[in-house]
Image (cartoon, rainbow, N blue to C red; front, side, top):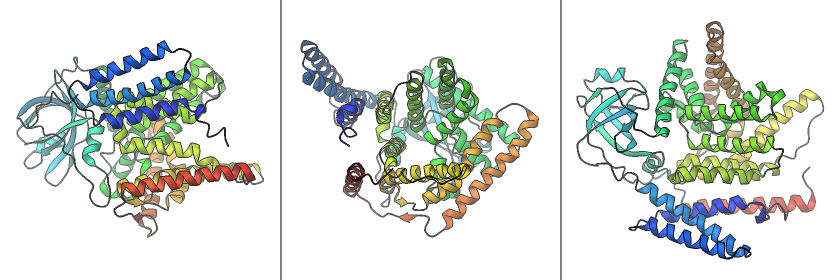
Length: 509
């Protein structure tokens, strides 16, 4: 018990904590030349640590404060990236379509990547639909020239039920502006991307590749809600998913299937390891698998949850090859440091928070509820292991993330464990079939696409049925930050007490 909670076992966790505190503090350090002051203090601390090579206390304090200041610096630096955008002025710019235009009440909604000679940024756009027939021909990856007025993303508070801030979500995910485009103020054009960054080139390449893959799958005969689920689960494109289907998955506690996460990546990673199982300990084999994982991460647009999972898999794979023991919480903290170093505003992203909190819950809470005995018989043992693992993971994640979900979205799904037991096996097989569907063998594709359609329809029907039950979800009205803090204090206290009881009285095996 004492060793489990020994802070010395988690040095990277402490560093990540200081960096997160620095990022939070950096939001309030927007004074002139604040970056220079931060760098100067960091240099002074490093100088002091070098002068005291035998003082571990001085060096530890210097390291932690440096990471705190590093978080401050990254936040201040990121907040100045949008300074080159001309807000509230008519502007002519060229952009690439990032998402399929979706018809709203009077406009088509789509995301644009503005490719400017001085800056590259994402824009939420609304294109007038009245008398605009050519918009229906616009596809992902097309280049357009636009004359419109970019508007800044204003702050917004919750809707009274949830605390989800859409404007904060936009800024966190790289959107710098919003704009309305009249039907005669845009035209198709060729886009020169030679001057954009490598990261933006990868983003554009992934957008065009996803469009090609989804077009090919559609040509195979997969349409409707089945296509929308496949595009969301396998490729991270939720533009085809209608509002009713989203609500069904949300109410049944299965919305994580529509948002790419560690679950999806672990399924793909497991499939790749299965294909190379006899050579799994070879460095070249593990390197090939990890490269394939990162190619997939780029393909789906590099969302934070998938980057977190890929980073953790990379470090775990390295530890596996080197036959080293590793502490998963430290690897989780290291993944957070890597992501926040590139995008400090990711800390404000709901998906980032839920992703890391879910993994932390699995590492900390799951051992407490994973002590049930096995049943006799090999088949029963196998089924019981799977059932127990699914239930334990689901309960752990639900305990750890439910307060945050209730705070942001005003909903709690008590039926989630049952939904996961019924849907996860189908979702796993569905992802396997989609990967096989990408093999360019027409005879194989014609058979697999029918299996994919049946699996997707079955999954949607189960989710729709569970969502229709009266006990599927409970509305949580006006949950404040103090209540959220109190709930997590209670959860942490109960977890600590459970570990003490487990240690002293050996109630679990």
